Every structure is written in C-alpha cells, then in structure tokens.
Length: 208
Image (cartoon, rainbow, N blue to C red; front, side):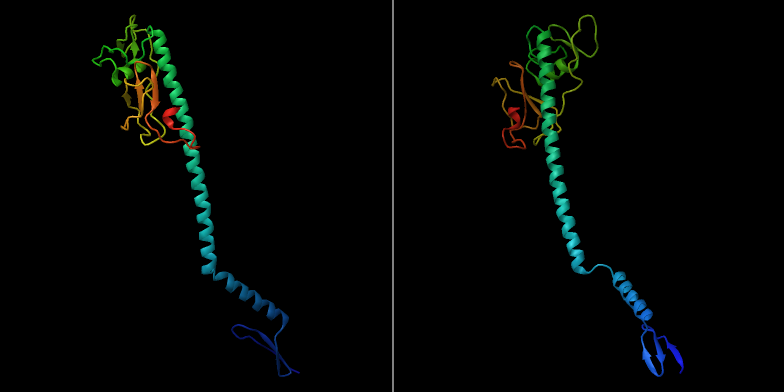
C-alpha cells in the first residue's frame, strides 16, 4: 500500500490506498487559516457604525459635563470677584471719611461720579480727600485696595472689567451696555452687568 500526500493551495490531504482523506492536523491548520483571514478583514461596516455612535454619545456626555463645570467655575469666580470689590469699596470708605471710591474727583483729571475716578481710587494711592497718585508719599498714604478691577466672569460681557456708573438707583441696574460691572458711587453698591440666570435658574447674576 502506497501513501502519498497531496498539498493543494488551501487543503492538504493524504492519499491512502487510492482514497483521499483529510487529516486532523490539516483540518486544524485550515481552520486557523480561515480565522486569520476573518481577523485580517477587520471590522464590518455595521461594527464601525456602532463604534462611531458610542463614541458620539461619550463625547456628548463629556461636553455637557465640561460646560456645566465651566458655568459652575464662572459663578464661583463671580462670588469671589464681588466679594473682593465690595471689601475694597468698604475699606476705601472707612479710610476716607465715609466717601465711596469714585464719589469725588481723583485729582488726575477724572471727575466725581466717573468710572475713571473709581478705578483710580481703588488701584492707586490716595489722600484722605481722594486725590490719587501712582506713588506713595507722606500725603498719599491710603491704598491701593486692588491691583486691578477684575473682569466679570459670567454673562454676555464675560471678560470685561470696565465699570458703568449709575447714580439714579441706590442699587444700580443692568445697563445693557458692554461694561462688566455697574456701580453707584453714592451708595457704594456694585453688581455684575448682566441679568442672565445662574446655572440653577434660581436668580440672576445681577442679584449676587
């Protein structure tokens, strides 16, 4: 009895007594070869679509969380900035006989009840009578109370640190302008210049 091995391109077999028989090892090799071919072909179109959809859902959730975190950070920054401004205003008033910053001329060409005088009184040295100076001397002994006016961190005017003046309302009102803050130098009240609602929708930013 003669035994010969036939090795075609895809399937190997053993010829025994004139009969062709596929051996177990050949079957295993062919099965492994087919699995390799399926793996090499990669993902199907349906699988790729599913992956893309899942990635889109994850991205949407992440974007929502990032937006919420940014809004929360802005609201926290607003509370901090208003606290700094109000403390500086109160300290200036306590050291200047009850006069609020900006309620008098600053001696630098900026008139009383002006935003420029307000900024000078808080960021420069000053006399008891309110005249301001960039340098400290025996007369200009008060301040500075702030290095700079902080920018408003929320609302449509986010990033702006200019100050609008409102002497008509004890607590100033939103102006609709581009300034970050609204201030009344006669009462010392300052607010964010936006009536947009906070993240929890419980109150407007100008009510902080």
